[in-house]
Every structure is written in C-alpha cells, then in structure tokens.
Image (cartoon, helix red, strand yellow):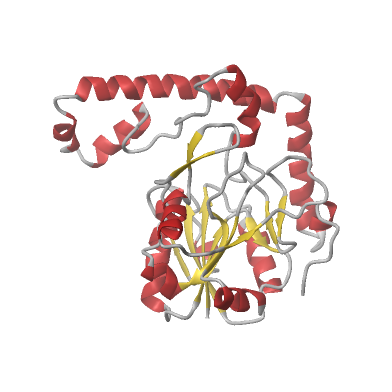
Length: 315
C-alpha cells in the first residue's frame, strides 16, 4: 500500500490537479491523507481516505499525518509526503517501490534555492517503518549555511540532521528543467515530479529572490521566520492565547521577550513591503501571468509540464 500525506491551505484549487495526476501516475493501491485547512466542503473531504483541519505549522501537520498513517499502515508500506501544489507527472510505480528498497529515503533537494541541502517535503518517499525508526520530523530545527553565506532553518532541517547523524545515505531528486522562468517555481524533479512552488502563499517570494537583498541589507531574510523560541508578536499572542500559563515561563524576562518579538514583527513588515515591490515589477507581473496560464493549461493538458522540461518522463 502507498500512503500519501499532503496539506492544502485555505483553497481547494490544487486538489483536483493533484488527485488527477496521482491517479494517472499510480498503478498500485494507494490512499491519500490530507490536512484541509479552511476548506469546508464535505464532498471535497470525502475524496480523501482521511481528511482533517489540522492545527499547527506545515511541518507539524505533516508529522501528524505521518502518525495517523502509521496507525493504519504496515512498516513496509510506502510513505509519501507531497506538497499540496505538487504531484507526479511520470509513473510513480514501480519506481517508488524500487527506490525505497534501494534507499531508505528519497526526496526533492532544492539546490537551486541558494543551495538548500535538506530533504524537501514537496516530495519525499520512504517507508512507514523507516520514518518510525528514525522518529522522522519535518520541523525546521537543524540549520545550514547557504550559498549566500547565511545560516538557514527551514522545513526538513531536523530530518536532515537525523539522517546525517545516523550516517544514512538518502537519494536527492534534483531539478531537471530545461526552461526556468523562475529559479525555484515551476520545478520538475527527476523528470518525474512537478512542484508549482509557493502555491498557497499570498506573497510568493523564495529565498533565492533575496540574494541581492542579502548583499544590501545584512539582516534581510536572516532568522525572520517566527518560531516558538523566536516569535513575532502574532506568534507570541497565539501561543499565550492557547496557553495563558505560558506567561509564567516568560518571567522575569517577559519585557525583553516582548521587545524581541516587536523587533521581529517590524523587520517582517519591512521585508514584506520589499517582497510586495518585487511582485509589482515587470518580472513579477510576468510570473503572475505565467502562473495563471500554467494552472489553466494543466486542467486540460496532461503534458503541460513539457514547457519546462522537454525530456520524456522516465518509465
């Protein structure tokens, strides 16, 4: 059995293409477990083996789905993590079963995003037993220094550290685009997986888009992601709303913590303004037009991806 964990957030626009291409690419029994956040439609939920509006970060939702799958699946079952705006474009079977026999884990690695070196959850294949044995975890956790010289923490960081510490060799699936209108978005990996990129984000900017910003502004993009340990005001407010007793844990450093959260919030707002400016450039407008064109094409053309990778998908 192939078990797939995916997350859709605040829109159902990617559900139809994802389920369509999964059915087209899998010639073996499979079931899809989904976190459907902000999608309140019973018929949509019924299309999945499991669906729930899970709380937490993207990484937390994937971890929760993996735990739910483990309760139903055999250790030898295939476990696939798949971003909501990602899906296979070439046959996954028997390739995925053969791959997890040869490697304990295979995943997209986005070298193109300033040298991101962690397994990326846009597509990751392993077995239920291996994920359980290593106590798999998608939380950012572990860090690395990227090609812009910045220390980065992102989804998959903990998993990267676990694999490194255990000396486990995993199979990276790399970008095979022959045409790149954007360095990261509209990605084809191993001629087999399509990842649209930032399909659920209002401001669609990737780390690679920050490269010039890094050179001009030392703090730009560094440690901006709010976390429990380094929150913004919004993150801090949500944490305290969920657990009012957490105030006690902030003392006697409450004022300093709130001050740090305020600084982070101001930095986030400044960077958000910069990113919005990027979307208003001619390049940003062209990418938005292209995104709309691609989404429309994929609903009527199963080979829409050839505009980005003109190689035939492997059999």
